[in-house]
Amino acid sequence: MGFARTILEGRYGEDPFYLGEAVWYPPLVHSLLALITKLSGASLHVVSVRSGAYLDLLAPVAFYLLVLRWADAPTAIFAAIAFLLLGPHELCSCDGDATYSPWLWPDNFAQALGYLALAAALSWRSRRTTIRAALTGLALGVAALGHSAPASMAAGIITIVTLVDLARDLREGRPEDGKSRFLQLVLIASVAMLVTLPFTYHLLANYRGAIRNWEGVGWQHAHHQLSGLRLLLQDQVSVRGALALLGLSFLGTRHAIARPKSLVLAWPALALGGIAWGYLHEWARPRGYNLPILFSSWHFALYLQAAESLLAGLALAGLTSKLSKARPERLSSARFVLALVLCGFGLHHYSERADLATNREHAVWRAEREHEALSAWILENTSSNDVFLASARQAMFTVAPTARKVLVLPRDFANPYVDPKPREALQRALLEAPAAEFRRLALENGIRFVILGPGGIVEGEGQLKALLERPRWMLQRFSALRDGPERTRLGRLGEHLVECPWALTTCEPPGGRVRIYEILAESAADGP
Image (cartoon, rainbow, N blue to C red):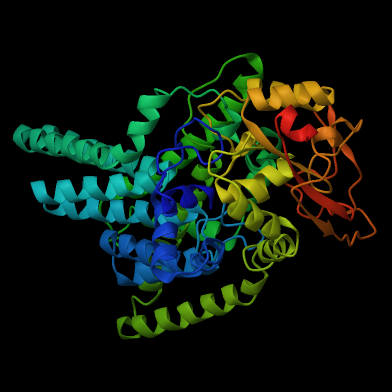
């Protein structure tokens, strides 16, 4: 929401969260949110919650069109069923499964753009014209503006398929065809890079692509860490995974009409290679080596599961064709009945999917807390360049959606091109300083507001109470702590106390007043 708000306010190009820094996340999804908000007149947070249910419909449609272009209608229909219904229901689509989601996760939405880029590349391959090559580059560039993961996967697959075709041209004595194919591949890459300039310009002009916060690009879900390798393997043990293996066996038979085979082989190979590189990156970092990565390797696991759906569709279409060989007139009926059985099997537990159950519970939990009221006050009473000192929890869920600035964000969600250590050191110094020193440090570094109270920074020794006689704004926060393991005790973050780990949605801070203090110059604070 913070990125979308900067666009709504005409401030595209700046980091919504860190003062003086540049945009670092691909802007397409945020631009769509801003556009829908502008056209509809609805609130940005309402659009952010509701638009995903509609925009994400593009993912299964694009996946179906890709498989249809690659193979035929039966394969595409079965692949779409596997994509929508046969995945691991217990995993969030944001980082665990390539499927439809009602939530507008940028990586989940942008997968559709990657599929459309691949479909455009297949169209170009069937009839290699300059216009089709340029359109493929356009589609690839748009995918990159959505997220780097689908663009990287699509670019890798297109390159591999083209090089395989080029090698065949040379082997069969058609060097001119090979040269033409290579030059059009260069055209595709050039158009794609041109399309991404509204974003990559800021990265290159301000940061030259140098990553200084590796947690910002290397965060890994537990399933995708070395310690969770067993969990990742378990995720692949499914009906869809078994069908995918069967689909590989059909690639070399006459039941597989799909072309080119290099696409479906390059796809899982790239995904597996990306996962392996992520493990290597994780292993090397503690040993002082930062291997280059563009994004976390769990994105590759997502596209591995998309490849599973494609192969599952191939298996089901080929299997029905083979079993109906003696009675070909019954082939359509057999496929229709099988599709119904698979839909019934998948829909039986569909409502238990993490996206429809757990994620919704977390969203309702946050909506009932103080963040919306705090954010509303911030939007009405502060300017875009005001900087807040806040806990990780309030920085993420209260300040960030308003596109006001914070001193420190959790590294996992902070600008990967900004070194977090100086900011974290300044925050520690502020929290340990006496009141007068606190005011001086805060004003020198442009910090204007502090959020104190439950869910915010705890006052500790009491020095922060000297900021003002009274806060600018406060609300009473009521608590409903539950008994049992979900009840979270006070813990330490750095050198200061916080009441809840920011990312733990089952953590309930105690009741009390949440206050926003304004840091005034000494003369203003002391009064007449």
